[in-house]
Each structure stands twice: as C-alpha cells, then as structure tokens.
Length: 461
Image (cartoon, rainbow, N blue to C red; front, side, top):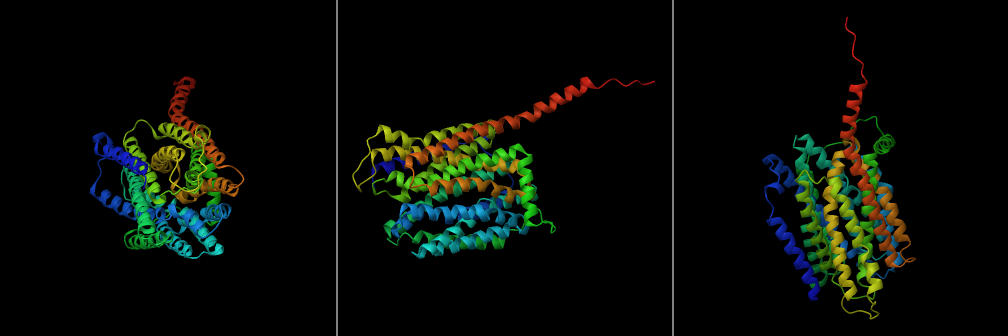
C-alpha cells in the first residue's frame, strides 16, 4: 500500500487524538448515572447498527463490478435503493410512529439482513430486490432509532442538553470509530483473507442479529401518536401540515435534503473519481480514512454543541460552504492537472489531491449529523417525528435518483459540480433558518412595546 494513504490516515488520527485529549470542562457535559446507563445502551445498539451498514458501504459498487455489471446497470441498482427509500420510507416512518419505534428498529434489522443475503446471488433481479429491501432499511435507520431515542430521553426526564451529548457520541462512535473499524475489517476479509467481496455483507448480517437481540431484550416501546382513530393518510396529512405551517421545519427539511442528496451521490462517485483508469486503490482503507475524517468532524461538533455559542444554526452556514468548496476539487484538478491515461497502476497525483478534498467533505459530514439531529429535536413535533423525518428524505431520494439515472450521460465532474451547487444552496437556506430562529425574541419585545404605547389609560371614577 502506498505511503500516501498511511500519511493521510496517520495525520487525521493525530488531530483527532489531540482534540479528544485536550477537552476541558467547558467541552464536557456533567450527567447522571441513570442517563449514562441509558446512553451507553443506545450507543452500543447504534454502533452495531451502523457497523452493519458501514461494512457494506465500500464494497457495494465493487461487488457489482465483480459480477460484471456496467456503470449504468450499477446506477440503476442504486436508483432502486433510493427509489425504495422514497416510496416506502414515509410509510414505514408513519408505522413507526403509530405501531412503535422499537418494533421499527427490529424491522430494520430483519430487512437489512435479508438485503445482505441477496448479495450472494449474481442475478440482477435478486440484487434489485436486495436494493429495494436496503432502501426500506435505510429509511428506518435514519428515522426510527433517532425517534426512539428522543422520545425515551424525555420520557425518562433527562435534561435536554444531554441529548446533544448522546448525538455527538453516537456520530463519533457510529459514524467514526465503528466506521473506521468496519472499513479496516472489511479490507481484511476481502484483501488479506481473500474471502471475496460478499464476505463483508455476511459479517454485517451477524452484527445486525446481535443488535436486534439487544433491542428486543433491553428496550421499551414508545410511540408518536398512538391514537387508534388515525390512519396512515391522516398521519401523512398531519405531517404535511406541520411542514407547511412552520417555516423552520420546511427549511430544515430542504437543508437536510440538499446535503444528504449530495452526500449519497458522493458515495457513488468517489470510487470512479479516484480510479478513472482502473487504478488499484484500497477501497476499505480509503473508506476508513474518510470515516476518520468524519470522526474529526464529530469531535469538533461535540465541542460546539457543549457550549451555547456559537449557535448550531450559525456555524452550520460555514460548514456547508466548506463542504461545497471541497467537492469542487475534482473539477479544479481536471483543469490544472494533466489526466493520466495509463491503465491500472497506483493512485495518481490528481487522485491524491481529491482524497484530501474528500476527507474535508467527510469532516463536514461528521459535523452535520449531530448538528442536524440537534435541530430536528428542537423543531420537529414528537407525535409525527418519524413521519416528518422520512418526508424530508423524499426530495433527497428524487435528487439522487435523477443524478444516478443520468450517470452515463454527463462527465463525473458535472456530477460533482451539481453537488457543490446544492451544498451552497444549503448554506443559503441555513442562513435564512438562523435569521428566523433569532427573530421571535425581537418580535415579542417589539409587540410588547407597541401594546404598551397603544393601550389608553382607564378612566376610574
């Protein structure tokens, strides 16, 4: 393996270690023992769930190429996953609110295990079924678990500030440390032990089964709106009304869709971007490096969320601008660096520069997750939390499906350019959200002053 990969990985690891070891009392939150037990249980389950997801990440595209499918056919498989998440996500989210979030989390485990099993077949239709199941599972992963956590946190009477602590730790572990270990473990299974690209999916099934057992034995059930007289259509209407009537929720949904749409497109694009001439790149190790960068971002976010200033609505504007600039790097290098036409070999100089840019983007992803979780916990009503969160995923899935459907029609630089534009749009909307959240205090004070000056004195006889 080339020295470059070790240098980037080691440099990121050193920065993360310094940030974590240099935390002072201002960067820490004092909690209680019951909360710590609750938090640790959730973090264990969440880490297992994310490990089941991350083990698959670096090898989905690679597995399909091993089976002999073209980039266009692979794009259609990815579309099936995102389309499934779009079509069924809101339904499963509403069922989670009505039938129980714990049941939804168990359903995630079962659905994703079945999706992993389909990877053993080289048949296109079977793989397509697996993508559909994976899309449903993804909707549950990014709605049911967070909804269960928020509801259970407040049901047990814990301080609201402690919720940010759980969010940042979950991302630090689940989207950081666990993702790194998953990438390295997957690399060992595929490269070192030569077990083939399907072996990470088998390992993922095993971890998901363990997590499901813990959920079933230790979690209690909670609901959004358990009233029996509300059907799914009524829940959809209530969620839509909540989004339409509250500009903060609508803006939050648009911001999430723009960022996550770009992020999921990046998941598809980074492999062909780094190996345009079939260069030999260590997928698992590069993936682990990205996750270490995400871990760096979550470490920064934990410091920011532990303090009252700057507000999350403010610093996220900067994060979106940086992420937008980082995905412009493939376009910049295509103009400034002469592209290599040599087939095979190691990563090129252009590829090295892009890896650095992609690591910057992943650091922004690490900041994004706990920050968006914090904002969702503040703005989204509890009774329809899962439903609304999956409503947010509809536009992002449409965006990703359109991009992937046209993946062969446009150069890869155009795709990165589109993602960069959407990320910049997210920063503009975030600026608007920050302005709205600061407005109520001023408006209330102004209204009170106007009432005091307008009210005439009473004539008391």
